[in-house]
Length: 215
Ligand SMILES: C[S@@+](CC[C@H](N)C(=O)[O-])C[C@H]1O[C@@H](n2cnc3c(N)ncnc32)[C@H](O)[C@@H]1O
Image (cartoon, rainbow, N blue to C red; front, top):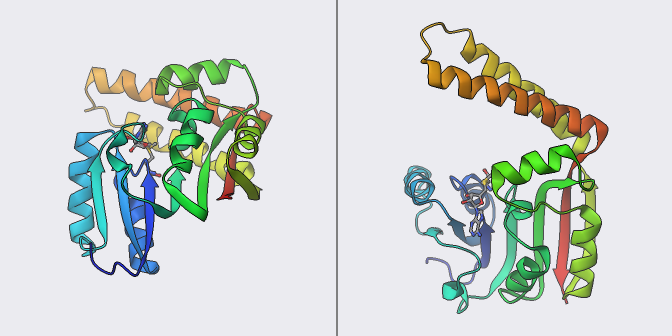
C-alpha cells in the first residue's frame, strides 16, 4: 500500500467501507477494511476505486478471528456498528489486542444492551450474536490489555435514526406496486425499527462511542 509512513488502521467490520474511505480521505492513514460478506467486499472495493483511494484502502473478505491478519500490526482499530455483534467480548478484545501496537487505540461506536431483555433476544436472533452490556465491555477491556480513554453516550442522538428508518420503510410501503414478499419484509422492518426506537428511549439498548488504549 502507498505511504507506508502513514498510520495503519484496521476498519473491523467495514461494510461498504464508508469509514475506511472517510479516514483515507481525511487523515494520513492507510486502512485495511474487513468484512465477512463477499458481496459487501465487492461493493466496498468499487466504492474505494470511485473515491480514488485504492492505494490507501485495502478491503479484505475475512473473519477477524481468522489468523491471516496476524502478520500485520495496526496503529489503531475502528469498529463502527460491528463490534458488539461480532462475538464473545473477551475473545474479541484478545484478538484485537494482538493486532494493535502498544499505545494504539481501539475506537468503537456501537449498541449495547442493558441486560437480558426481549429486545436483546430479538437483536441476538437477527444478528446471530450475544450482544453485551457496556459494563461487560469495559470490565473485559480492563482485565485485558486496554485502558479506558473515553466513553460517550450517543443514545439520545441515535434514537431518532430508528424513527426515520421506520418512516422510510412506511414510505416504501405506500407504493402499491410493491411485491407481496417485499411488503411483508418491510412491515417486519417497520416493527423492528419502532421497537429499537422504544428500546433506546427505555435504555434497554444504548449507543456508546468507546475509546480504548492498549497498554
Ligand atoms: C452492520 S455492518 C457495519 C458496517 C460499517 N462499519 C458501517 O458502519 O456501515 C457490520 C459489519 O461487520 C462485519 N462483521 C461481522 N462479524 C465479523 C467478523 N467476525 N469478522 C469480520 N467482519 C465482521 C460484517 O460483515 C459487516 O461488514
